[in-house]
Amino acid sequence: MNRHIVIVGNGMAGSRLVSELRARDRNLRITVFGAEAAQPYNRVLLSNVLAGVTAPGDIGLTDPAWYAANGVDARLGQEIVAIDRERKTVTCADGTVTGYGTLVLATGSAPVVPPLPGLDAEGVVAFRTLGDCEAIIRLAGGARSAVVVGGGLLGLEAARGLAGRDLPVTVVHLGGHLMERQLDAEAGGVLQRTIGDLGVRTLVGARLTGARAESGRVTGIELDDGAVLPADLVVLACGIRPETGLARAAGLTVDRGVVVDDRLRSIDDPDVHAIGECAQHQGTVYGLVAPAWEQARILADLLTGGDARYEGSRQVTRLKAAGIELAAMGETTLGDDEAEVVRFADPTRGTYKKVVIRDDRLVGAILLGETTTAGLLTQLYDRAAPVPSDRLGLLFTGLSPATPTETPVRIPDAAVVCHCNNVSKGRIRACWEEGAREVADIATMTRATTGCGGCRDTVEGILEWLGTQEVTFPTRSGRR
Ligand SMILES: Cc1cc2nc3c(=O)[nH]c(=O)nc-3n(C[C@H](O)[C@H](O)[C@H](O)COP(=O)(O)OP(=O)(O)OC[C@H]3O[C@@H](n4cnc5c(N)ncnc54)[C@H](O)[C@@H]3O)c2cc1C
Image (cartoon, rainbow, N blue to C red):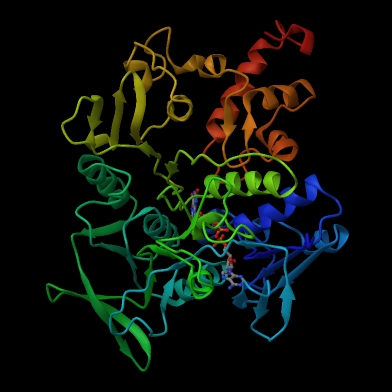
């Protein structure tokens, strides 16, 4: 039997699958093709690179030397252009043909570029890759003003990063309020005000009709009300589309993504799998790193003889923009059903908090302006655990004895704290007992906090709490 595993796509899902496979089986034959020439990197951190808080050199995931040292055939900068499922081969853009036993598609997504005139001008850049990020930074250096098209997570992070570089920036957003996929209208309004105070102008309900250019270089964008916004840098953050062209051409069932079952297998071919943003499981295509890495972990288990099943992921979104605290999860815009909604709004101070509870379980939440209970809410949401009767404690710390200052105590050892890397509270406690005292120590020992970074507060809280227990429970034998 040909056990050769060929992975197409060496982004966050593909590169994680490679390391998960190798950690489980030293002898497995693995080949990975990546269209990007760079070593795999943490795409999530591109917003930090754009904002100038992280250096491009600090976001690498797998060192190129690792591949040789670990017997992995890594073909960086090589794009696969065809799959022949009968012959079980893939063909590279340079014509080379490689046979596979098992094929994994991890091709991610491509940015949506609206089919409008002028968007091919120089100075118009989508925001997806390290190359895009470097181009935006270079263009921002000589620009007088910028427009970001799209007021979702990505667009707002890009706009905040550009404003931080002292560039006047306007966000043009088609929807009725910012981040409408994660926020209700009121939260969107509060966010608009907050980001406005940070130097980002926003136009909601604004439809782009095209870009203006002179000598091939963008000079502005046009809106459907006739307004023209001058800009010598236009960043497109209008959404993403799963990269499914190869799969479709190979006759695999594709809806929005490559349709896979609970073994992350194409429903048409047991030798072809798909993970990450190109995969569609139970009707959902995920656009976050935690599901991509969870899928990589489960598939690695399955391909090395395990019997795991993927059951879907819970999604928690955090905005990474200096001066804005925002976490959102689950259902935040409900119709008038039986759900219990607890809200606090202080728009002038940029604070908006909302929890949605159904059948005594947290089904959705927004924390904007102040996110101290984000760790607690994430845990409750994730575990579908019963919420405490003290609803106020879900929104504010320190108001009652049962509030989230106790969060780390409340979380059971088995609870997963870092979803990107599947790190439990118990594992963090074990690291602490081995001497880890800082978040950086935990990151080195477990990789917790190194994915989307959303668990950082919780990890800090656990370390702080363990510190307070040091006298009482200094050793493993003292665990409770
Ligand atoms: C700026 C930015 C900020 C983000 N912030 C967050 C965040 O805060 N939290 C969060 O959870 N997620 C965030 N995301 C989303 C997250 O990065 C993605 O969910 C994650 O990268 C998906 O991993 P993937 O492997 O499926 O796709 P990718 O990481 O895009 O990797 C796909 C790879 O496949 C390669 N490829 C495609 N086709 C081929 C082919 N035919 N042959 C060879 N190679 C091919 C591509 O070049 C690419 O390198 C952010 C994304 C961006 C762009």
